[in-house]
Amino acid sequence: MPPHTDLLLEEKILKTAQRLWRTRGEQGLTLRAVAKEAGTTTPTVYKRFRNKQALRNKLAERFRGQLNEYLFQAKSVEDVCRRYLEFAEDHPHEYQLLLHSWSDIFHPDFPQPGRQWFMTKLAERFGGKPEQYSQCFYALFLLSHGAATLLSIPADDTAREEIRRNFLTVSDTVIRQTKLFRH
Image (cartoon, rainbow, N blue to C red; front, side, top):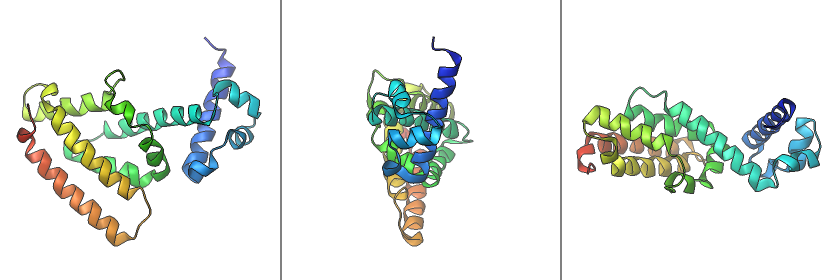
C-alpha cells in the first residue's frame, strides 16, 4: 500500500486535474499545468500517471462515479432521465470526457453499477426481474445520451429547450411503455 502522503498527493493531483478539465476542457489539461497548479513537479505527476490519457481515464472514472452518485439520488425512473440531462448541462466538459469512455458501460467485463441499479428500479416499479429490463435500460440510456450530448454543446436557448422538452416527452413515454421492452 502506498504511503499516506502519496495518496494525498495523488488526490491533490486528481482534484487539480478535475478543476482544470472543468474550467478549461481538453486544452487546459496538460501534465505540466496539473503539476504547476497542484504545487508539484511534472515528473511527480508522471510517476502517478504515465501520460495524459492515463490521467483522462482516471478523471472519466471519477466523473462516472459522480454521475452515478447524482443519479442514485433520483426519486423515480423519470427523475433519473431528468437528472442525467442536468448533469450533462451543468458539467459539459466532464460529459464530453465521458463521451470517450462509454465503451466501459457496454463491456461485459467491467462493473456496471448504474445499469444494474436502474434495471432494479424498473423491476421494483413494474414487476419481474431486473435482467428483464435490459432493453428498456438501453433504450433510455441511448435516448438520454443523445439528448445529453446535444445539450453539452453550446447552442441557443430555444434549441436547447426544444431538445429538453422532446426528450422528456419521449423518455416519459418509453417509461410508461416499459412492458414493450421487457423480455
